[in-house]
Image (cartoon, rainbow, N blue to C red; front, side):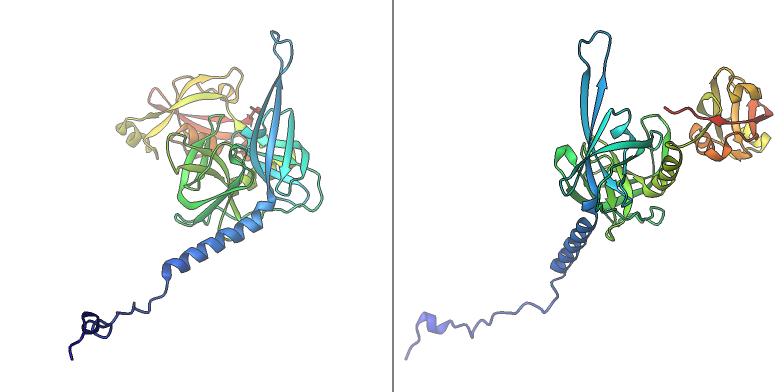
Amino acid sequence: MTRSLFQLVSRDDFPVSQPPNLPNSDGHLLDAYSQAVTRVVERVSPAVANIEVRKIRLRSDMRRPLERTGNGSGFVFTPDGYILTNSHVVHDADRIDVTLADGRQCSADLIGDDPDTDLAVVRIHAPDLVAAPLGESRALRVGQMAIAIGNPLGFQCTVTAGVVSALGRSFRSRTGRLIDSVIQTDAALNPGNSGGPLVTSRGEVIGVNTAVIQAAQGICFAIPIDTAKFAIASILREGRVRRGRIGVGGQTVQLPLPLVRQHGLANESGILVMWLESNSPAQRAGLRERDVIVEFGDRPVATIDDLHRLLTEDQIGKQLSLKALRQSAPVKLVIEPEESKSP
């Protein structure tokens, strides 16, 4: 008896190979990632707020005041209603309104702001507030998860996730002062995210979202929470952050290598004094235009940003040494920084 074609070719002739018994690793990782983000959002998003500001301006050529509105983000960091946000969100605002994640709306008072670090604190009075836990930014590692929560373009409580792309970046605030140790992340930020929290997978705030580079993709910045803690303490105490000033306008210049070796300087650059404010600490100390500052407070300075970093609150009113080069000859002066005026 002959077999048909279907009988000649049977499943037994071509056994189906079974896939190896491997764990579904991709699915496992996706589940863990999703669960981590979800846990963070559930923990932190109740503390995130939408901040709407109104600024009223009146000029002599106007019949009626001009009212401008803007919005940003912030987050509650104490149960009694203190909210951290960006200075550029609330600076010079005539009215501040806060909408919480649960829909409650409150008016807010500006406690203080620091344009030099682009940070500000406002306060609302409402019961049963959820505060976001503050972490530490000094222990961050490149590549770890970073989750941004905010209100971009008016879309409340929007979540984006990425990684810490780089650490130790420097970023200039709107006042021109350099902010050190800024966090770079690829967690997407858009207008309205400013002031919202950047959070770890443990649900701890490590940064305050502040800026994006509009022409690029995935390059966003956050003020480190360790910087914010310093600013918060000063703002809650005095309504501002106190810094020193000496009344100098300067620029960084390279020094001739033979001059560096001759005077045993620590750096190959210094601060060329371009101008002096009248009756400023620098002028009273005897500093002159065209001098090149190379040391301040017995510490070497190579750039104008180095000088800014040393002009802390602790230096106000103290007599400090200043070393400069005047026509290639070293000059030592005694200078007493005064408190910087608020922007």
